[in-house]
Image (tube, rainbow, N blue to C red; front, side):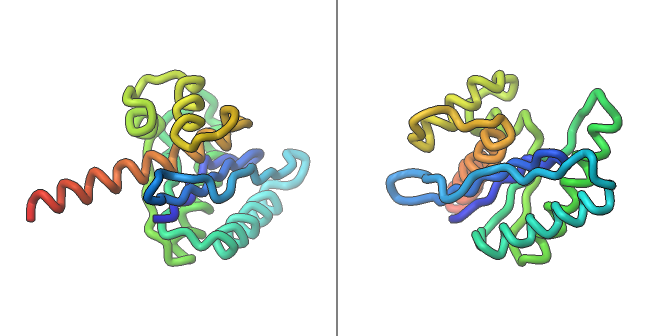
Length: 166
C-alpha cells in the first residue's frame, strides 16, 4: 500500500508519502507546500489546489490520510486549516484515492501507542519506524508522515479483524 499523509495548512501544508514493503515502511516523498500570507486568499487556495493535484498525479497513492480539523484555539487558524483540508480531501477524491481522516490523537495512538503523546515522541517514533537518520523536520512533515504510518497501522488492524471474522 502506498499512502500519502497530508497535514493541512494554508501557509504550510505538510505531506509525506509512505510505501508499505515486506521489510517495513519506507518514505517515498516528503515535503511542505507553501503559500505566502501576502497573497490574496483565493490565489493562495488556487495555488495550493494546483500543487496538491500535481503531487497526487506524480505520486499516485492508493490512499490519502488527512488530519481532521479537530480543535483550534485561534478561529482564523481553524478556518485556514479547514480550507486547506477541504482542498486536500477534494483533490484526493478527484484523483480516485481512498480517503481517510484522523484526529491528532488517533494518529498519536497509532504511531506512538498513546493518544496524548507529545510531538517530540511522535517525531522520534516516525524516525524509528521509517529508519530515518534524524527526526523529520519541519513538524508539518513529521505530522504528515505520522498520518501515513497511522493509516497503514489502522489498515493492517482492520484487515486482521476482517480476516478473523471470516
